[in-house]
Length: 184
Image (tube, rainbow, N blue to C red):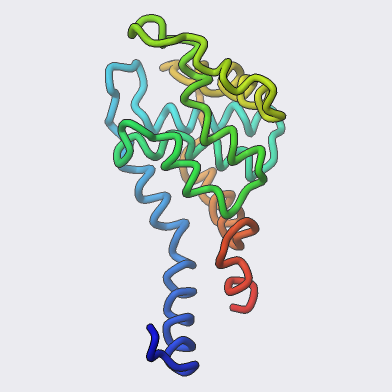
């Protein structure tokens, strides 16, 4: 890198931006890996994600929020012990601070509904009281996440959400590389 030239970085930058345009495809492909993975629940992880996003969409949430709802558990396969942080890292460049915070911390808030059954602190979320996004995260889990395990719920398909994923991920707004993306 020390010996790179402007010409080198023009090539690298162009290749980088071409690769970056494929992010929605890679994310959608990874979501498909959740299909058939039930983990003991009455619906698989893909259906849970679709139900969460469908509930948020039908409640009138904006596209960035709906995409966060769709992707909130995408980290289950690669970040089994820290799935919220994995999902939050994926969406961070494309969403507001609040939507990112909801995604990053939903594990603590979702635990309110079941941690006590696992010998964990049901009130783990209380450590975040006073945060300006506390109520929004509690609402996400109450209205959309914890309710999205219903085998009879008619959720929208992944194809329905695909255009939203593409629009939300079209341009980063909170990224070290946002300026480079603007120039492309």
